[in-house]
Image 1 (spheres, rainbow, N blue to C red):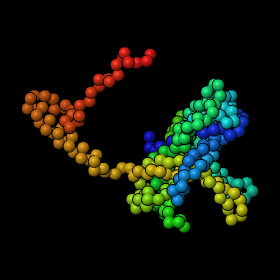
Image 2: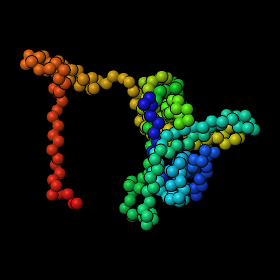
Image 3: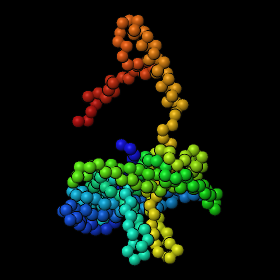
Image 4: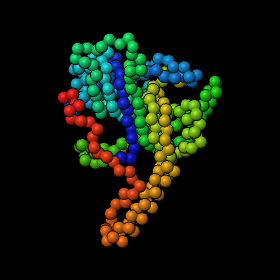
Length: 288
């Protein structure tokens, strides 16, 4: 695997579902999911928010969703981000839309219907909007400062997907380009440490916002708002200390083993703590 492009949502279907058939007879449907959330603003204030996501489901997953997922139903979806591009027939402008291609779908409502909200419930009512990508930075980060002095940075990350064509049997590859937004102190550190071509791990949430062109047409862009960015493929002092320690201990063990006539290929285990596999759970304590 060259890269990672993984999205997880827990949200609510917003409208009735209709299934359509491809020329080859495969079922496909688009789900429209709203994910409520509590987010922090630039000023540090926590506000109620929501994000909307288009999710495409194929085959049996589409049929199950159409049969059992009703408007207002809660659902878990895992999948990947995919951006489709085309040319507007009238204006000849290049257009694009980013959606989620579902790989997993789990219906979350009990058979008896959704429960009422417990009076004491707070954080436990949170949904899920999580994006994880591993890919290469496509351009140098661009950082700016908002009117209230908060740093915000934009970053381009490319991921690759490889699959085998069912008809031809050939391996095919497609790249996805993700727009990443980073705020605050993390933005400053990313700007100082990460450059075009670096491999990074980004984790955050997916959001789609709208904007207007100079001609007044409404457009949408989908971004990953990052709460974590990790530079990959770099040395780590803590890890290197452990590796050197094990390596030195291994050399000493190898020399000692040779003197006792043991095999030189014996794995070096010095420096690794013993692990006890004894269970702390007693059979008589189990409730079943």
